[in-house]
Image 1 (cartoon, rainbow, N blue to C red):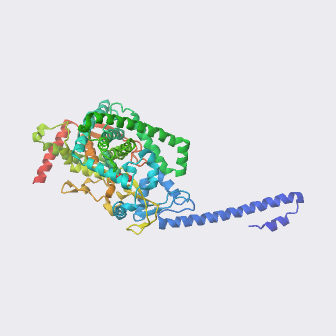
Image 2 (image 1 turned 30 degrees about the horizontal axis):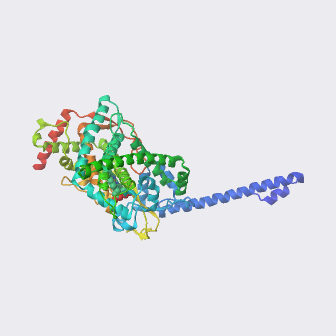
Image 3 (image 1 turned 60 degrees about the horizontal axis):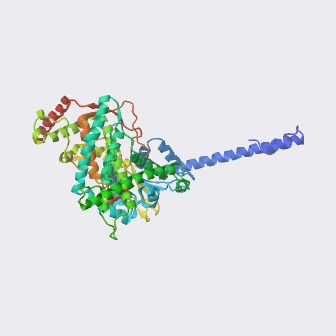
Amino acid sequence: MSTNSSYDFNDVSFSSSYREPLVSRRLFLLRNVQVLELFLALFAFVAIHSLRQKKRHGLPVWPFLGMLPSLAFGIRGNIYEWLSEVLCLQNGTFQFRGPWFSSLNSTITCDPRNVEHLLKNRFSVFPKGSYFRDNLRDLLGDGIFNADDETWQRQRKTASIEFHSAKFRQLTTHSLYELVHKRLLPVLETSVKSSCPIDLQDVLLRLTFDNVCMIAFGVDPGCLGPGQPVIPFAKAFEDATEAAVLRFVMPTCVWKLMRYLNLGTEKMLKESIKGVDDFAEEVIRTRKKELSLEGESTKRSDLLTVFMGLRDEKGESFSDKFLRDICVNFILAGRDTSSVALSWFFWLLEKNPEVEEKIMVEVCNILRQREDHGNAEKVDYEPVFGPEEIKKMDYLQAALSEALRLYPSVPVDHKEVQEDDVFPDGTILKKGEKVIYAIYAMGRMEAIWGKDCREFRPERWLRDGRFMSESAYKFTAFNGGPRLCLGKDFAYYQMKAAAAAIVYRYKVKVVKGHKVEPKLALTMYMKHGLMVNLINRSVSEIDQYYAKSIDDSNIVSV
Ligand code: HEM
């Protein structure tokens, strides 16, 4: 490269008035070239250094931005698969470093030892925390899902007694019978008759929303019905959750400012919460009136009625606001989880026809055990399964658990570190940090499930033909420890009742070319729904399954 001095001094043909700007222009150009070289060298150094960190930290760590560029890349595709890959390479745990101005630093794990430590052994060190609570307070208030310590414990204890009571079982059995046989099946039959595809995920979401409202409020909003009506309360609830979740991807000061100014998603949140509150208020008012007329003799066993009959530690009844919080939280917890799991189950079933066949044989076998169905001539083509029959469906339960293992309704969950701690794998955790347990990734770890971990194989849940549950720290779809999902048994009952009723009557065929992929949300929805065609099973087909169930039981008894 020529130097500035030789070039300038030899350039004598121009007058001095011309020479000066030219010299300074060239000087400027050359200085720029040097700055550019310097910049490139610096960039190369930073890039090599950042990429080298990948080996140690699992992802490149960029100055200022931390691991954000990799996360942005991961979000473009299937974020859960991307996360599983990173966790697999890092032996189950890695520490995410966010941009310096954000609060994204967190430890992410799918190691069952760490998950057990987090959810059970050191439960009190890992609460939901203030970050989660602040983000969801406007919608969830002090309800069970959003509470820690005393407030959580009190609701948990009462709701747990209620969920295990005979009265509650009666309520759920009755409400499910009404919903499945008087609403779900007629809606599906309309689709069959019109030969029109139907979004099965949407239908199932409506089913579980109505069902959980019956349990929480003792009221049926009527979402599932002909023409898939828009119900203002359901719409307000959906809008409120979507808008509230957006707070998790915004810096806290931004959403707080938006809330103060009543702008954008915060405006929508405020309006939709009002829709939820108006509905809750009306139900609470009506129930109070009803109870004052009926006195103690009410036959109702929904959560609202149960909590209305209780007193707090000062002997006073709960405020309307607290009653509202309790109900809204249960609706949130139980609204979409089962329907989303069922959607993935039906999608997997089509890909695994041998599993579908085994479910049909199991169901026929159970029906044959009815006193009046001892032979194939008395086949019931429109059965209503009783609670005892649903309980006996072990293979179906295994298939649903396998769907939840691969597509958990809550794909990742989160806790806050209350005091410095160390995970069993040696990872150091600092107070205030977030810990994320990657439930989706846990289902895809060879170290946990073996080489066939990505296969849909219900048999892995069976011992001698009976369903055997797994450790909650290996299969974390329902959480574990003191905060194990309260609705787990009910959810299995609900999913089995709906799945058996559908599988027995229809073949579910996903519309050709319909794209199925997870949506980035707190719950693992299918992003584009599940468009399916339903095909009625013929009488002869059902007869064949009955015959097969006789053959199979003969083989077992021999
Ligand atoms: C397939 C269906 C379901 C799955 C996969 C599931 C999963 C979960 C998970 C992962 C949690 C922990 C969430 C957290 O603390 O961040 C949870 C909590 C909870 N679930 Fe479920 N759930 C299901 C169905 C239901 C149903 C139908 C109900 C109620 C009717 C319900 C009621 C609850 C409640 C009340 C909690 C909070 C427990 C606590 O914090 O003590 N769940 N569930």
